[in-house]
Length: 310
Image 1 (spheres, one colour):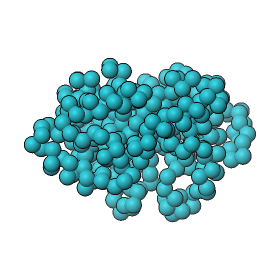
Image 2 (tube, rainbow, N blue to C red):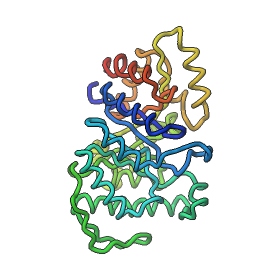
Image 3 (cartoon, helix red, strand yellow):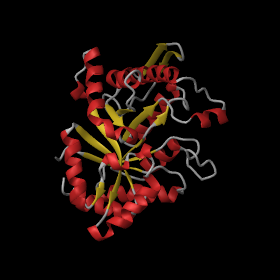
């Protein structure tokens, strides 16, 4: 199972830049392939906590690492005009020598839009805007030029040079499982489909729904990397399991985190067994929240006892 890519999700709420940089550099040293950030203007539900801006932080981390890939789970499409985002993405891909992962979604927190006066709208409207952005990004990366007229965005003969280092483009990650709006966008535009934590209890049905969406447009579903986001509570031994489980329940016990559905609670052998099961379902990328927010001890144990065993 050498083709399973393990990444770590480090939502930056409450962290200083030094905190996040330390985790990024430890991931790189440990051989963990990717690090993921969130894209919110403040911590969801906790506006008084410090929270660094997502794109600036990713740029800084990529400039201070050499092999680690960095992305967002996921960028909010409402925050940046797609032509500006295309220019940002090609520039950061150049700066990082091709290590950008471009995760993007339609937006998830109405409150931060209302506070800033940014458009929100219905889920259908947000999905339509996301579809136009994805079309613009494809044009920019393939042609180094954008010429697009849609309901929400119009871009006329705009050059995007230099283009990205990665070809045909930085991997475009679209997260979500909505069968009416999101999965058709995944089928048409995504290089990577990420299943969020809240859908971990319904994996097989959502995989079938994606395959159906691909069949509708004649795309081979095998051309889409399947990624899953999950909480992992990794313990060095059985004796430490109650304490680790308690901390995981405290931080990630809410239904939306899918702690129990994910099945990634236990010692390294148990985690490896569950990762094998996910691989059998077709998932070749796993993005992990860790129960202790990516401590040195957990990152080292993940590398030495889980990734090494895979």
